[in-house]
Length: 638
Image 1 (tube, rainbow, N blue to C red):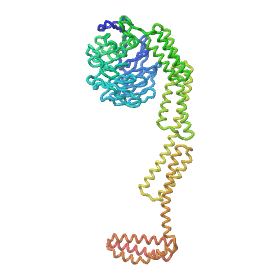
Image 2 (tube, rainbow, N blue to C red):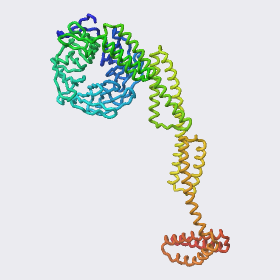
Image 3 (cartoon, rainbow, N blue to C red):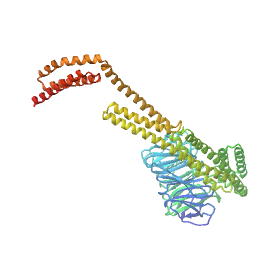
Image 4 (cartoon, helix red, strand yellow):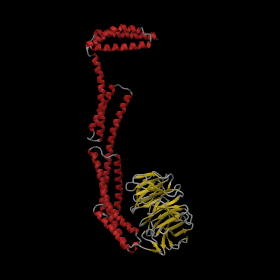
């Protein structure tokens, strides 16, 4: 630590601090890992510094809006912005991409595989990092400004509503567990394995038991300044207020260990890293070292205890033995080809090395050697796991290609295919980054080869699917056009003969298309169904027309019957004519004349059909006579 002095107010007699450095950035949020310090900055960048010398390592960005929060895991850096969550790869510091958000983000928390995001609309967003699956639920009526989670519970709060504790569910909305103190409005929330803690505008902190959700006690502040940020584990609580107060509490003894104030400086987000405290201030990102009675006070190590002002430290040999146990389990799982589980064991070993960095100061070479060896083994497990994933995805894509090629269709629905395409593209992106990061391992080159094959097979499968969909769409469009023309003919009330002719043309066209379609394909099924429908309708209309012709033939097919009918008509004509002349109503007379004319025309057709020449002349004379009678009736009416 440096010997820099500042104008801070006197700290507690038990806890002292020393300003290590001040990084000149306008920080909004802070995170860290074993090697780097990360800050989300108001100028739309996430900055990364080395914790060894506090030199700037990378500037990640530029984001589309001011980042609200920064989170890290073993391989990635995340920045939550108003409408996006950005993601970068550690080491190379290259941007991988981002998640688009449907609501306005205000705060976020990362725990395990789940991103929780509080929004201006009062909704809680959840993003599963392994599948990118996003869900949202309306939890509050106003904007969510406070959020904390630990995997088993979520605590959210707003400026207008009391904080609420929820149980997260896998596929449904979180279940409400408790509403914390409706009389107070929180300004910040955090928690540990025993309590959920709510910071208040008065500077006090209320502790709520996680068993019965009852108010256990209140840590009373002497500052009367609103809390803006809190950090906690099972032993300690650190709070910051906008007026520039930093307070450290012993949660086991319910006492204030110390308070740090820097006159004229405003404080923001606070994060604890063992014996270092990172705090966003109005003059920059401050790094402070914390000591107790001249010894570094490791606030992150829950095995440390303050007992009569002495620190009981974890044995480095216990830590190393636990690390080696996880390493051996990882090696066994790797040999059994359980690559993901092997990675988990290697991660557990690395976490032990990271979390116990101070306990291992006595054995730096052993810690460095184990870190290097386990990281290398984890890289191999990661490469082999990704190779297995690439091979599995490629097998599914080849199956779809074979289906499209052999049977002209795929048995998967559209949602399944879209999901497979997305998984393949993400796997390709991750594999190329992983190969680049592990270029000194021969497995990375196998991964590159398999990834190239997957890329090629994916593009080929997509092209086949596009061609398949185009053929299906063409067949559907053809049938829709025929159906539209048929509906038009029905609306225009065209004759059955015209409709029959249209069906004959469409049947020929469908038969031609069907002959060119691939066997057992979806296109063939569509065309065949349409052809069967058109043929059925054609046969039905044909039967109706044929029945009408048969009925007419049955009446006039006999020459004797036709002759008898014609003679009967000719004999009754004079009587019908006289009867019509007696009709005074013009409309009725006109109707009777039209009916008589129709009967004479039918008789004329039958006479000609059977070669009845004399009857033909008689009927023609009667038609002329009726026509003259019809003309006289019109003149009379005029």
